[in-house]
Structure formats: structure tokens, C-alpha cells
Image 1 (cartoon, rainbow over the protein chains, first blue to last red):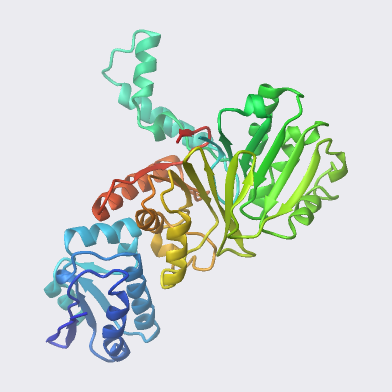
Image 2 (image 1 turned 90 degrees about the vertical axis):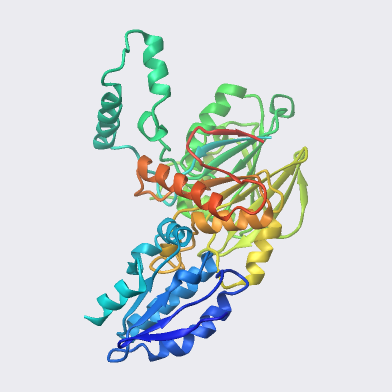
Length: 115
Length: 321
């Protein structure tokens, strides 16, 4: 899975591209691994820019659950931003909107994490 | 084939509280404001038009289902799933329908946890000589569980007081067997102490009963196997007790699943209908209704082929396949 990375101030932004489903979830997990490992207490916060993700299935949500758990254990900070409307609905229906702090835009997430 | 739900609640039976009934009355009377309800017919029409969560209830009995082929009056043979607390009312209905004429009951057990066997001591046909009850289970210890439930000090009526002939049949998963005009296949499921799903086929109709089953999303083989087990089903009765987020985090390894996974597996299997089942005991009618609406929306968002019909099972519901 293509996951371009950029920096906004001291925040690292990773932007998965494409559907996250049975066929691609493992690729997403692998591509996130180094960024999650680096997301520790005193390191740069991490934002997942979901603007390029048109759909996520249960197995994709599981990858995010594990990511969130890892970052929490490392005392890092992780946010998800810019969800497309369908993906935001899937987060709501699955109650993942109660697991992650969701932001309307990457800028909003970066501003919140920078404080 | 008809499926009649006698108990649909998960883990423990629950009852409506006075406060919940008061809330329904207030909602109904608010909806009635300004309406002309000046005849019994007008009142009935108005009540029937209220949302289900206001005019009715999903009920609180634990798992109990009846499958009707339509020839029971002639065959004197019946198919049931589980002996949750709903089995008490089911037994009363059987007495009303058949009196003391000898009947045979084939009961397919998901597993032996209390909420799935607690109705048996109150299943009146078990006390009537001439009746035959065959308890089909994937568990070798089914007889022990049912016998122990009757023992002192847990219950005052011992197992030897049953008048019916009671038999236990341990079924090997994966083997398609013929029982009373039906073909039945069991599937081992992920649950504490294991549970078993049942695929029931008759007259070119298929009903799958799959409750108390946790699904590991990362296990592709397991997903594929359930896709085959559910394949082409006219109805899948599915354990949708938790939200997906809860099922894979704080309630992981609790042995239950979610509405999201139910939809995904039914879509994979090209099933026609999904019954959300084994409702969380702490959920009220409005919450169960809300989950149903959200699940239908999720199905619409993810639909690639034929639409999957989705409903929430409630005590008393009859589905004609």
C-alpha cells in the first residue's frame, strides 16, 4: 500500500492511499510499523491522513486498533484526520469514533497535537 | 421453513423496567398530541404506526428458537435451537398445540453455558411421558451439564423426574446428517469451552444458527470457512452482541461478535437475510433499534451484489423462509 509521509512542524503525517480491506490491511500494517515504533513519549506525534482512503473494512479497523494500542503503550500520540464521509460513517457504526480522536482536517489534528 | 424466535437476548434474561415502560408511554402520548384518536380503530392504527421500540419490545428471554416445516401436526416431530429461558413459553405453546400426544423434539445446542440451558427445567414437554427429546450437541459433556443443572441445591426437581425419554447425541462437526426431514451440519466456533453453529437445510431452504461465536479478523482461513458455512443461506442468525470496537478490544476473548462482522460474512456468503441476535442485556429497545438502523446503513455502504435483508430478532418474531 502506498503511504506517503510528510512533516508538518514537529508532527509526522502518514497518508495511506486506497481501500483498506482484506487484500490490503496487512500491507497497511507493515507500512505503519516504522512510524508506530517511532511514535513514543518524547518523539513526534503521528497523524494518519485518511483523505485518500475511500473505504475501510473490519480487518482494516483492527490494524488501527492495534496501532492505537501500541502508541498508547509507548505513551506516544496518534490521531486520525480527514476521513472521507463513508469512512467516517464506518467509524461511527463500528464505534471506532470512540476509540480515536478524529479530526476534520490534517491541519486541525496537527494544531491539536502540537499543543 | 419458518423460524420462530422465543428468546433472543444474550448472556442473561432481562425484563422491561417500570421506568422503561413509562418512557414508552410518554413517547407514545407525545406522538399522539394533536391526533384525532376518537375510536378503537383509530387508536390501534396509531399504535401500529409507532416505532417498534415505542410500541413493542425486543424481549428479554435468552436463546431459544423453533423451526417449523409445516408438517409438524402429522410428523409429531420438531426442531429447536437451544434451551434458553425462552424455552419455557415454547414448551407451553407446544402443550397448547399438541396436548399430551407424544412428540419428538430434536434440539440443537450451540453450547452448554447457563443462558442456553436454563429453560430446560421449565420446558413442560420434558415432564410428559411419551415425549422424546433428543439433545444434539457438539459437546461430549452435554448430558453432564443438563443433569447437573437439576441437582440439589441448584434445583428442586431432579433429572429422574422427567417423564419424557431424553437422549443425548454428540455430533461430529462438518458431517452433513439427516434428521427428521432436515439435513444438519455443525461447525465448531470460537467461544469459551467451544460453541457450535448449525446449518439446517430443508425444502431448498437454508437456515444457519451461529451464536456465541467470536471471529478473529486476522484469520483468513476462519473467515473463508464461515463464508462456506453461511453460503447461500436464506437466513443467518448471528451473534451481534457487541460493537466491532468493543469486540476486538475490551471484550476480546469474551466469545462474541459484532454487527459489522455479521454483515461482512453474510455478504461474503451471498446470504439473503441476517438476523442480529444475542442482544446485549444492557441494551434497551431504542439502542437495539439504533444498532439495526446503523447495520442497515453499513450494508448499504458496502453492498456490491444483491441487498442483504437485515433485522433484529425479537421474542415472538416469525420469519417465513
